[in-house]
Length: 336
Image 1 (cartoon, rainbow, N blue to C red):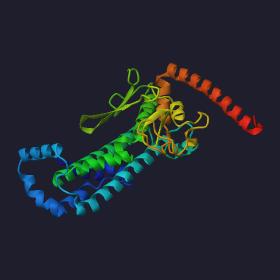
Image 2 (cartoon, rainbow, N blue to C red):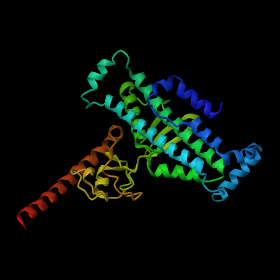
Image 3 (spheres, rainbow, N blue to C red):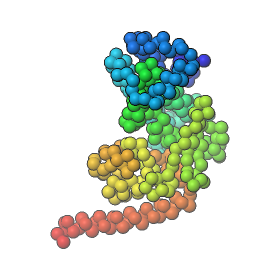
């Protein structure tokens, strides 16, 4: 079965009804845009020359730069719409993940009332199934995005599709690079451990914190495996009280505060708009920093001794910073 048919079946089946209010990549419509392009039609004949010609064309594409200029007809409709759809998918996915986590958060005031309304329909299996559907949703849209961009490069003999993919990754709308996916994974593991007492061996998410490089692993359809590193790039230790900056990079809270030149008790929201990410050097990434509470809870449970040591060190540093801060404030007020 071709991917277009598989994707259509996914959107129309039981899973599609669950995600009926979610945006998705219009794979078939974008494919029709490519077919209606004159340049695509001119090159269509060369697409039927067999596997050897296809392989030769791919080799020429990788060994050379763009062979043709950008196609105005395709580019005007294609990339603008695809960017909007990718952005909508990322936004819909993050809002759904926030809703699930908020519903099951121990600190949520609405948890009792929502759970009471859903007491006859909601159960651990339903929650686990919802997580799996969201993972499949983001995976299928990521595959659709990858395939339609590859199709664009193939029919135009260009590298614009790969350039566009790098661009949306830079703009943080690439579905599989969202920190909310890691937060969903941490929630899935925490939820299964609390309801079953152990990790779901056959589940899509797994976490190995005992290795020298702690990682979270996500298994996608067709045995595709993604690994997310849980090491802070500043202290080179497992992330503690992890925060995801606007650029998607994850750091310990104390490390991120140090990089932003703010005190721990002040928080990342007080960072200057000119403060840069220590890795990608992007500015303005601290204002929308995301506290990854589910990942923090997962690490707290699995790394108890390390977490206690880091907590004690953080409190000691906060006392020093608070004393320094108020000493400076007193000098400003008194004048010496």
